[in-house]
Length: 216
Image (cartoon, rainbow, N blue to C red; front, side, top):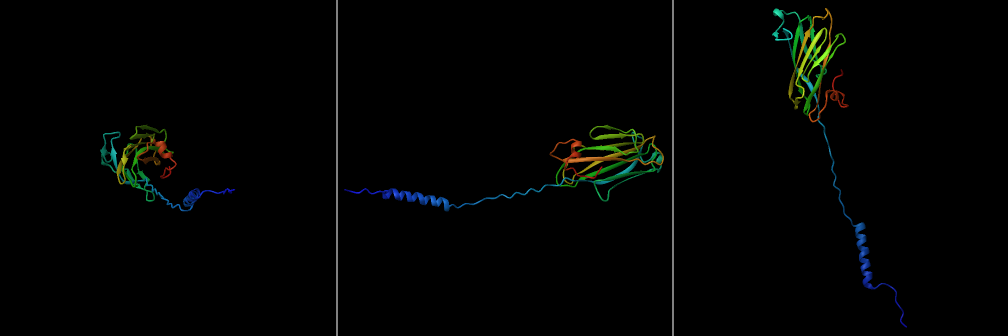
């Protein structure tokens, strides 16, 4: 009687070995490579500074104007200067002013940053000694009329300025009839510039979390 032999035929065993070896190759013979991207983003600088100021005197308010003081007198004085510590601040001073005296100043600002910006808008704020002040006008020209002074500011709001571009504004100060003798009156004008590719109101411009500039 023949005994049965248990086991796999040689052909089947050979096939099984090939499958095992193939599995070992996948598990231990896999070559691989990574590709890496290292990204760097360097942002630009939005900056604006006052660049030039030139002041003179006029008479004939509210116009047409004549150069100088009435009858060629030299009574009042006006001067303007850029702050020595912060070129984003510009100062005006009228000395020995009197009713109907008109100071006229032409000022220039410059894009001293690396990205373009738009001039968004401006505000004129009266000092504490000016009374009954009313602000009137449109986007590019506004007049602050007080009992003691009238301040007219004209600017090219809405214009775009590329790096190194220069823009000009005009400030006129008229001493009114109710101005007191030996008094000092103050006012401030603030302009706001924002990056050229964003639309913003003046309020959004000055209240941005990334807003920079001198304090009010």
